Length: 479
Image (cartoon, rainbow, N blue to C red; front, side, top):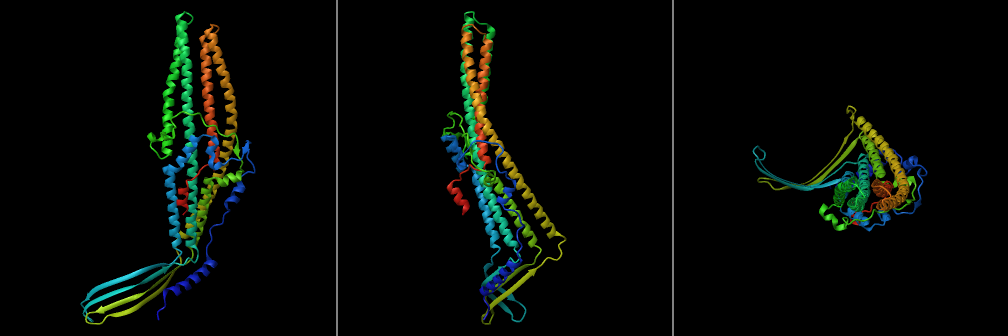
């Protein structure tokens, strides 16, 4: 009775597993992410700021702007770059499946059929052959090289997922920043319109006073110049508004003409951020940031690749088994049937390769050290971004308050100068100076509100929170 394939495979698998437990090469040792973070993260932030329990995963809701909330949700759902990044995650998962398949035996069905003529005896005539069977092959991972390749592929999946999270975070922040710039430009246009009305009234006033001999042509020319200066600034602001609308459309995966479904073209005030920052420790923020997780995934991948390079020093085995039936018939002779079985075990061990394996190990170890340095640099940059954004948010709130007071004062000065000029108690130069001061303070306050809001966006982005993946996207990437 011929031996079957299954018992032999079980015997070989048991032997390989025992050898694997004793001889398998391990990944290069390295500290885990929490320990690495603890070695770099300080105990507390350097910049002090009022703290509160804020949900950083939906930070855009802290602005209290429903249009902004709908915009970010729309961008996260419809952006084409996010969809492409999700496909890259699926590709990495497929590569992992391919690498894992190398650990298991491969079984194939075989079939053959032949018809040939023999012109030399014996015998003389035609030969017919046909056969079917099974062929199994297996490369036992005795020294763990294939297993380490699987670990490297799994680290790539983690890195691609973290990169997807990083893209969502950046996209939400960029969309919010574009929305803030849009509202700033719309407010700027409103400021110019308001100041144009002020200067238009001043021009009409000087023209009337000139008619009664109470003013001069010089005052009229100066008033006209002030009005023309405002008119010259309006087209540029209108162009900025259109640019921001087009940018938001691209973020949303839409064409520019279809973006007005969110009613963005209707002017609204700048969103006002919270004056508090989320309660979080530096170590917690670093662990939360997707760019840190991406950098650590690369360290894990490089560590597995170092082990895979070292495994090339050891022998490699391959088992081939085949079993089947072959039927043959010769012209004039009865058909003969036979059971065919074959088994082969091959082994290959490196002896001389001119330093190729050693050079590969050195290169993989160098790449791992490079990735560890990159991880440390990423964490240092992350801490800098958080500290800077905390400082910008704190000082930006103070600047907005002070510029608000300055605008109230310049507005009061503008009204007084108008009244004094109408009464003939001051020159038109005083009115011009008051108009310039009011416009300057109004634009400065608008710019400060914009910077304050952008600082809040930068803070939430630097803390690593602020993206909500659609449920269907998550389910597709986690399968």
